[in-house]
Length: 299
Image (cartoon, rainbow, N blue to C red):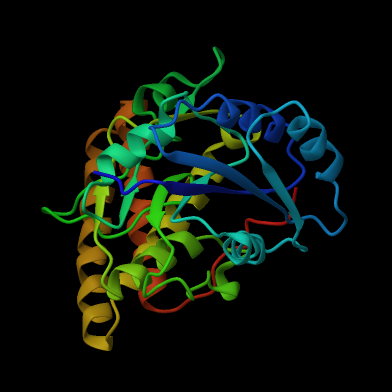
């Protein structure tokens, strides 16, 4: 049961995306449990407040209060931290500025979290008709959180709920050094877990995101998988753990390479193993603390 009354602050970072207005509109349609109130905080990560007019115009048509903050520049951690600085809710929820939330999104997150401190839901990709068949079949752009064994170790800010007010992690913030490379959310939730937070999955709390043409390139997907591997390596805290994880990842790269060769005649299977290999190469890179590619601030 969720203690009520309870306030949920929905945190959203934006950078030159017109879709932010549609995301805000979907948040305004939330059907909330009795005693739960909603507030939206939008942090604009551009050098100039380029989203201010768009956000305030959308907010003027909404019943849900919207707080806009300018948080320059081109470092997503700066924007995420500005959202946390402005948060006063019992809970904070995270969503991306190009996603759409169904009307029961917040309610389903709150129902799923139970006695846990956080819950992660899926962000499902919506593919255009001209998307490569193998890409849509594998659903490679969707972000679906998972358990490792019986544990949910970490998650992503594309769809998450976190207990916030009066918690041991209320003073924690996103790592600025990861603010251009990505992986700042994975590391943040790992850190929150180390402070005692427990996480679960919210299988019914699903948001959707349309896949744009620039993200349907194999090069973009390979970089994404590589970066995901680098981000996961943060789970290995000690030198010994990093060595063990790197060795396991190397073995998996070899397995992926052999499997890819075995299925070289099948584009679907070949691409599957190629992307898996890229992720495990990223794990090795993360264990060796190699430089990560910058993905934020180039739009």
